[in-house]
Image (cartoon, rainbow, N blue to C red; front, top):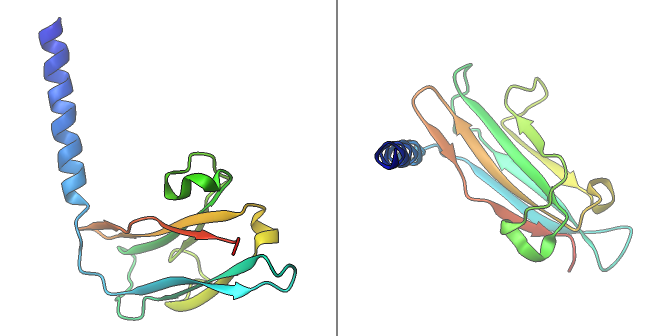
Amino acid sequence: MKKLFFITLFLFYLTNIKAQMSNTLCGFNYEINVSPVESDVLSSIQEAQMSWDFSNINFNKKLIVTIEIVPIYDCFNNESAVDFKETIRISSNDTKFNKSGSFLFKHIDMMTKCFKWRVIMNSVHCVETSNWQYFSYLK
């Protein structure tokens, strides 16, 4: 029984390594950033202006770009936080999606003090997931 357990565990480990190896850099060329903007509500709070430019990417039905924004309740943990609100997704599948654009995230709308975000590029041959980035509304 122990032998079967260890063989199963080993096979699970190998498939996880394979899955992580398939998430390699695919060579997509894009720009995305979040910059602070002065809040018109409180001077101690800043808003987040997210800007992106995917104009160097040839979009088709087989390529899906998703920007995931996760509002965080436990901001003291930064990117390692575990207490979240519902994830916000900006996707290239949406008819209103533009190759280049921006969005203003307001503290009052998010009802959290911080959020983390990443980009997921999913094509037939490759999946590229960026690292999590962190933004705090507090100065």
